[in-house]
Length: 454
Image: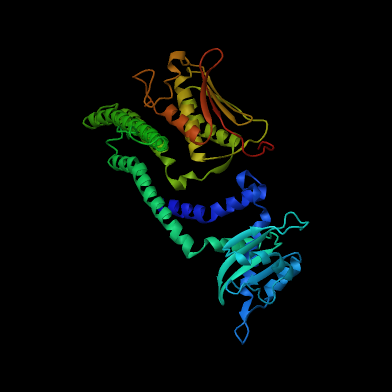
C-alpha cells in the first residue's frame, strides 16, 4: 500500500500537474487563461532549431536545418526562427531576416527568456519566445515565432519535466510523501492487525467472542462488523449442530437400551417383534441423519432429470403394501401433462417417503391417503387425521419435536424433509385438510418444458 501510494504521488507530481496546466490553458480557465494553447508549441520548435545548429570547417556557427525542422516549416509556413550569438550580438546564417530585424532593438539587453508578439502582425494569436540556451556548440539566444500547437509538442513538454533538476526538486516531496504514507498506513492498519490477532485466537470453543471496533477507523468498522456477523451465524450454526447431535444421541440411547434389555431375555415370546420395532427405529434415525449430511458430499450434488409424476407414482407403488398392511388406502392424482424437473432423486424420494410415513400414522384405519402431483410442480400429501393445531405449526418442522412423547417417530422426518426441499430450491408447507387432517405441500420451480404424461 505504501509503495502504491508513493507511485501514485510521483505520477501526480510529474505528470498530472503539467497535464492540468495544459488542460487549463486549453479551456481558458482561471488566471492561466492568458496563456494560449499555441504557447505549448514553442518547446518543440526551439528543440528543432537547437538540433540544427552546427559549425563550419572554419568554426563558424550556422543554422543547417535538419529534415525534422524542414518538415516542421512545411507544416507551419508562418513560423520563424533566429539564432543570435550572445557575445557578438550577430544572427547566425539561416536565421529569419524578418525576425532578426524585429529583435534588433534587443541587442542592448542580455535577455535570458522573453515572450513577445511582433507589432503589426495581423495574427493576434501569434506568439514568440526568446531563450538563452546552452547548445552542443555553445551558448546561443534562440528566438522562435508563429509556432502553433500540435499533439507532437507534448513529447517535448514532457521532457522538460523529466530531468535531473526536476528529480532533485521533487525528491524531498516524494520522500516526505512516502514517510507520511508509511506513518498513516501503519497507524490506520493497526486496528486491523489487532483484529487479526483476535480472530486468530478464536476456535470452535470460543465462537462467542467478538472483535472490538471501538478504536478502529470508520472505514474499517464495516469489515469488523461483517466478521462479527459471520461469527454470530457460525456460533448459532455450531450450537444448532451440537443440540442436534445431543438430541440424536438421546434418541438412539432409548431404543438401544430397550434392545439390550430384550437381548437379555431372548426366550420372551415378544422378543422378535420388539427387536424388529427397535431396530426399525434405530435404522430410521440413522437414515435421517445420513440424509442431512449427504448434501455435503460433492459427488452427491449431481442432479437427475425427473418426471415428477412418474417418480411419485413409483414411490406409491413401493409404499402400497405397507399401507394395505396397516388397513389404510392410498389414492393418486397424476398431472395432466409431464412435469420435468432437475432434482436429486434420492432427496426427493426421502422427502416423499417421510411424508407418506407421517400420513400413514395420522390417517384413521380404513381411511384414504391422497397423493397429488399438480402443475406447475407441486406434490401434495393429504391425510384425514387429527391435523395440527395452529400453536404447533411453528414447531412441527423442528428436529426431534413430537406432539406426543410416546409417539413411534423420532421427530426427525419433517425437519429433514423441510431442509432437503429448501436445499433443492423448493418449499415445504403445511395446510389444514378440509374436513380435518393435514396437507403437506411441496412446491418446486419448474425448469423444463412439459410434454404428454406417460
